[in-house]
Image (cartoon, rainbow, N blue to C red):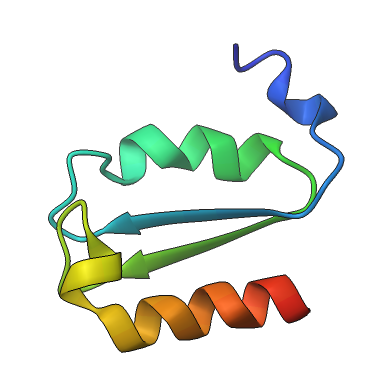
Length: 67
C-alpha cells in the first residue's frame, strides 16, 4: 500500500493522539510519502481527539478545510 500513497494528489490531513494506538511510527510513513500532507498530533488524546480535545480538533479540521 505504501507504494501507492505517493499518488494521492489532494491535500490530506493526518491526525493522531499522543496516547493513540496509531503512534508516530504508524502514521509517519504516510506523512513522508503523501505530497500535500499536514500532520497534527493531539497531546491530550488517545484515539478520540474529536471527543477528548473537541475545541482544538474542530479548529484544526476547519482550518484545514478552509486553507
